[in-house]
Length: 201
Image (cartoon, rainbow, N blue to C red):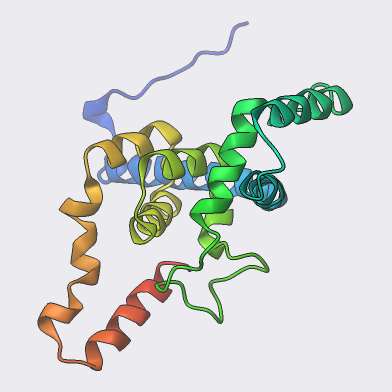
Protein backbone atom coordinates (compact mmCIF):
# COMPACT_ATOMS: atom_id res chain seq x y z
CA UNK A 1 0.00 0.00 0.00
CA UNK A 2 1.40 3.38 -1.01
CA UNK A 3 2.10 5.66 1.92
CA UNK A 4 0.11 8.85 1.97
CA UNK A 5 2.01 12.07 1.87
CA UNK A 6 0.57 15.11 3.52
CA UNK A 7 1.33 18.68 2.66
CA UNK A 8 0.85 21.74 4.78
CA UNK A 9 -0.72 24.70 3.12
CA UNK A 10 0.83 28.11 3.78
CA UNK A 11 -2.26 29.03 5.82
CA UNK A 12 -1.67 26.09 8.17
CA UNK A 13 2.04 26.68 8.80
CA UNK A 14 3.01 27.29 12.41
CA UNK A 15 3.81 30.78 13.58
CA UNK A 16 7.39 31.75 12.86
CA UNK A 17 7.85 29.19 10.06
CA UNK A 18 8.68 31.74 7.29
CA UNK A 19 11.44 33.23 9.43
CA UNK A 20 12.66 29.73 10.37
CA UNK A 21 12.93 28.54 6.76
CA UNK A 22 14.54 31.82 5.69
CA UNK A 23 17.22 31.49 8.38
CA UNK A 24 17.70 27.80 7.60
CA UNK A 25 18.23 28.50 3.91
CA UNK A 26 20.80 31.15 4.78
CA UNK A 27 22.64 28.71 7.07
CA UNK A 28 22.65 26.05 4.35
CA UNK A 29 24.06 28.50 1.83
CA UNK A 30 26.67 29.63 4.34
CA UNK A 31 27.63 26.00 5.06
CA UNK A 32 28.00 25.34 1.34
CA UNK A 33 30.38 28.27 1.02
CA UNK A 34 32.39 27.11 4.06
CA UNK A 35 32.61 23.55 2.70
CA UNK A 36 33.89 24.87 -0.61
CA UNK A 37 36.46 26.97 1.26
CA UNK A 38 37.87 23.99 3.14
CA UNK A 39 38.43 22.23 -0.17
CA UNK A 40 39.73 25.28 -2.02
CA UNK A 41 41.95 26.95 0.58
CA UNK A 42 45.14 25.23 -0.55
CA UNK A 43 44.13 25.62 -4.18
CA UNK A 44 43.72 29.35 -3.75
CA UNK A 45 47.13 29.59 -2.13
CA UNK A 46 48.56 27.53 -5.01
CA UNK A 47 46.99 29.90 -7.55
CA UNK A 48 48.47 32.89 -5.70
CA UNK A 49 51.95 31.32 -5.80
CA UNK A 50 51.59 30.38 -9.49
CA UNK A 51 50.51 33.96 -10.18
CA UNK A 52 53.57 35.25 -8.34
CA UNK A 53 55.91 33.02 -10.38
CA UNK A 54 54.30 33.93 -13.70
CA UNK A 55 54.17 37.61 -12.80
CA UNK A 56 57.85 37.63 -11.93
CA UNK A 57 58.80 36.05 -15.25
CA UNK A 58 56.58 38.38 -17.28
CA UNK A 59 57.65 41.50 -15.40
CA UNK A 60 61.29 40.58 -15.91
CA UNK A 61 60.63 40.45 -19.64
CA UNK A 62 61.74 36.84 -20.00
CA UNK A 63 58.23 35.47 -20.64
CA UNK A 64 55.62 36.49 -23.18
CA UNK A 65 52.18 35.28 -24.22
CA UNK A 66 53.55 32.31 -26.18
CA UNK A 67 55.36 30.94 -23.14
CA UNK A 68 52.18 31.17 -21.06
CA UNK A 69 50.29 29.37 -23.84
CA UNK A 70 52.88 26.58 -23.70
CA UNK A 71 52.72 26.48 -19.91
CA UNK A 72 48.93 26.07 -20.03
CA UNK A 73 49.22 23.19 -22.53
CA UNK A 74 51.96 21.48 -20.49
CA UNK A 75 50.02 21.71 -17.23
CA UNK A 76 46.81 20.46 -18.84
CA UNK A 77 48.75 17.57 -20.36
CA UNK A 78 50.37 16.68 -17.04
CA UNK A 79 47.12 16.94 -15.07
CA UNK A 80 44.36 15.77 -17.43
CA UNK A 81 40.87 16.24 -16.10
CA UNK A 82 42.04 18.86 -13.64
CA UNK A 83 40.49 22.23 -14.33
CA UNK A 84 42.08 25.55 -13.62
CA UNK A 85 45.16 25.52 -15.85
CA UNK A 86 43.78 27.17 -18.95
CA UNK A 87 45.59 30.12 -20.46
CA UNK A 88 42.81 32.43 -19.23
CA UNK A 89 43.04 31.13 -15.69
CA UNK A 90 46.83 31.49 -15.64
CA UNK A 91 46.40 35.16 -16.47
CA UNK A 92 43.77 35.37 -13.72
CA UNK A 93 46.30 33.90 -11.28
CA UNK A 94 48.76 36.58 -12.27
CA UNK A 95 46.10 39.27 -11.73
CA UNK A 96 45.17 37.65 -8.40
CA UNK A 97 48.75 37.86 -7.21
CA UNK A 98 49.08 41.45 -8.43
CA UNK A 99 45.88 42.44 -6.62
CA UNK A 100 47.25 41.21 -3.30
CA UNK A 101 51.00 41.55 -3.77
CA UNK A 102 51.01 44.62 -1.54
CA UNK A 103 49.42 44.17 1.87
CA UNK A 104 46.47 46.55 2.27
CA UNK A 105 46.86 48.84 5.28
CA UNK A 106 43.37 47.87 6.47
CA UNK A 107 44.35 44.24 7.13
CA UNK A 108 45.34 43.57 10.76
CA UNK A 109 48.87 42.20 10.56
CA UNK A 110 48.76 39.88 13.56
CA UNK A 111 45.63 37.92 12.71
CA UNK A 112 44.63 38.80 9.18
CA UNK A 113 47.54 37.49 7.16
CA UNK A 114 48.68 34.18 5.77
CA UNK A 115 52.28 33.40 4.87
CA UNK A 116 51.58 35.27 1.63
CA UNK A 117 50.27 38.83 1.50
CA UNK A 118 46.73 37.49 1.10
CA UNK A 119 44.17 38.60 3.69
CA UNK A 120 42.91 35.52 5.52
CA UNK A 121 39.34 36.28 4.41
CA UNK A 122 40.30 35.72 0.75
CA UNK A 123 40.91 32.05 1.56
CA UNK A 124 37.36 31.72 2.85
CA UNK A 125 35.70 32.16 -0.53
CA UNK A 126 35.91 29.95 -3.64
CA UNK A 127 38.19 30.79 -6.55
CA UNK A 128 35.28 31.92 -8.72
CA UNK A 129 34.36 34.55 -6.12
CA UNK A 130 37.96 35.78 -6.07
CA UNK A 131 37.92 36.07 -9.85
CA UNK A 132 34.83 38.31 -9.63
CA UNK A 133 36.65 40.49 -7.09
CA UNK A 134 39.83 40.96 -9.09
CA UNK A 135 37.93 41.61 -12.33
CA UNK A 136 35.23 43.89 -10.93
CA UNK A 137 36.66 45.61 -7.83
CA UNK A 138 39.89 47.59 -8.03
CA UNK A 139 39.93 49.16 -4.56
CA UNK A 140 41.55 46.84 -1.94
CA UNK A 141 39.27 48.02 0.88
CA UNK A 142 36.19 47.31 -1.21
CA UNK A 143 37.47 43.85 -2.15
CA UNK A 144 37.93 42.99 1.53
CA UNK A 145 34.48 44.37 2.35
CA UNK A 146 32.75 42.36 -0.39
CA UNK A 147 34.73 39.26 0.63
CA UNK A 148 33.54 39.53 4.23
CA UNK A 149 29.95 40.17 3.16
CA UNK A 150 30.03 37.11 0.90
CA UNK A 151 31.25 34.99 3.81
CA UNK A 152 28.76 36.40 6.30
CA UNK A 153 25.73 36.06 4.02
CA UNK A 154 26.77 32.99 2.04
CA UNK A 155 26.47 34.75 -1.31
CA UNK A 156 26.70 32.72 -4.49
CA UNK A 157 28.95 34.05 -7.24
CA UNK A 158 25.92 35.40 -9.10
CA UNK A 159 24.69 37.28 -6.03
CA UNK A 160 28.19 38.63 -5.37
CA UNK A 161 28.40 39.87 -8.95
CA UNK A 162 24.98 41.54 -8.63
CA UNK A 163 25.92 43.24 -5.35
CA UNK A 164 29.09 44.64 -6.91
CA UNK A 165 27.25 45.80 -10.03
CA UNK A 166 24.63 47.52 -7.86
CA UNK A 167 27.44 49.17 -5.83
CA UNK A 168 26.35 47.80 -2.47
CA UNK A 169 29.59 49.06 -0.92
CA UNK A 170 28.67 52.67 -1.59
CA UNK A 171 25.12 52.15 -0.35
CA UNK A 172 26.02 50.26 2.84
CA UNK A 173 29.72 49.67 3.20
CA UNK A 174 30.76 53.22 3.91
CA UNK A 175 28.73 53.11 7.11
CA UNK A 176 31.47 50.82 8.46
CA UNK A 177 34.20 53.35 7.83
CA UNK A 178 32.56 56.65 8.79
CA UNK A 179 34.25 56.72 12.21
CA UNK A 180 36.58 59.55 11.22
CA UNK A 181 33.54 61.81 10.71
CA UNK A 182 32.08 61.09 14.15
CA UNK A 183 35.06 60.44 16.46
CA UNK A 184 38.18 62.49 17.11
CA UNK A 185 41.61 60.95 16.46
CA UNK A 186 43.06 58.68 17.79
CA UNK A 187 39.73 57.12 18.79
CA UNK A 188 38.65 56.98 15.13
CA UNK A 189 41.72 54.89 14.22
CA UNK A 190 40.99 52.41 17.02
CA UNK A 191 37.35 52.13 16.00
CA UNK A 192 38.34 51.50 12.40
CA UNK A 193 40.78 48.78 13.44
CA UNK A 194 38.20 47.08 15.65
CA UNK A 195 35.54 47.22 12.94
CA UNK A 196 37.86 45.82 10.30
CA UNK A 197 39.11 43.11 12.66
CA UNK A 198 35.54 42.03 13.40
CA UNK A 199 34.95 41.40 9.71
CA UNK A 200 37.42 38.53 9.66
CA UNK A 201 35.74 36.40 12.31
